[in-house]
Image (tube, rainbow, N blue to C red; front, side, top):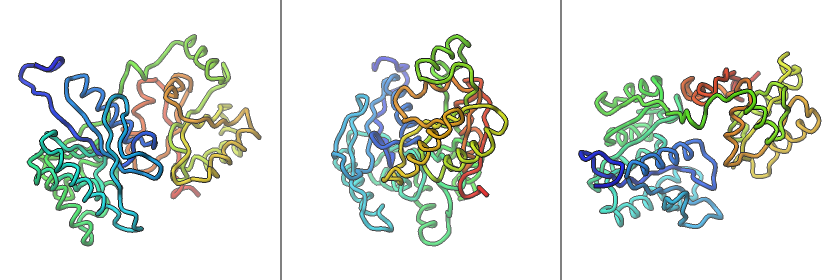
Length: 327
């Protein structure tokens, strides 16, 4: 019997797909890796497939997990066709090594795992994370109809919010195959700490010991409107809070020249008491215990999604408008 598993439960062999994976930063990839670690702890075997972006090798190992990178298409539109071909070829060669195909993301490209798994005699699971995004346009045009067709071939569709569950149902997915499972929280890692511990963490991170801190964690991307927030934060004198706005995140893959990051750094240098920008690192979760509130971009992700870390840390969450909604 596999250690860590009940006698009635057999170990599963799972192939997970996520469009971005280390060293590319992605919230979905971090969630996938967290889930994979827990499944491994319970005795299951996990491998990953992901897109092979320029400059990356076709194989890697991340935290003990085998990672296979597959070439996506290079056309401006419908690059998924080449990815589907490469994914089908990879799964066909390894079809006896897996029991389940699991996609993190329920976009048109991801839904291909449904018919592929059926063809290979495997089970399939897909998870949608963004309301009004993953499932947008179902049944509209040939792409939407094909998207819905593929989703209907998936054995289990996971929605992290009630809004996404409603979108699955509205798209014609049967209730027996759609499930509401919110993102989990590691309450041992993300938890409230004593004032003394918080002060010590601030000193380790070079943060002010007593000034209130509003924390933004996420990709430094124009879609998140973090630059707009920083500019308004400074212009509005921190909206009367006296708090330091701390932006923690990697440079966006869509900002190859680093222009947005440099602008944030310039604002931080000119207004050191009001704002600061730092690079995302594996220890960045330590900053969770430092702030008095979280700043969250209010864009497509539902309230349960963007509140999942502030809640165990006992920090209030403050949403701000995304770039498309900013005036």
